Image 1: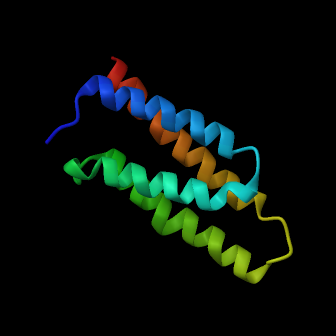
Image 2: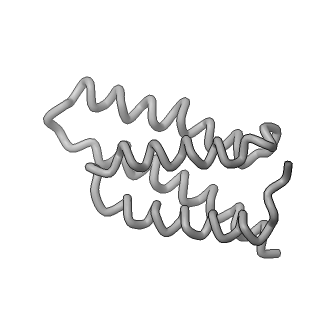
Length: 102
């Protein structure tokens, strides 16, 4: 069943706000990862959408890369990899908001 456009737009705007708050610290990684997985779940009604595919790409590539980086350099700052996740997720959510708003 398709989510009502208004409710979906509201959820996406709330998601974008959370992404912005999580961008402040790498310590928010687990919350960010949960947010991405929850967003995929929320959008699971349309598995063929490019939005879902893009989010799945973040999970399979950026998150994997970040976790690999942490395992290789547990005491070093992995902010570059973390910011890649933030930037891609925010870009995809913003794009979906623009699409729904048009």
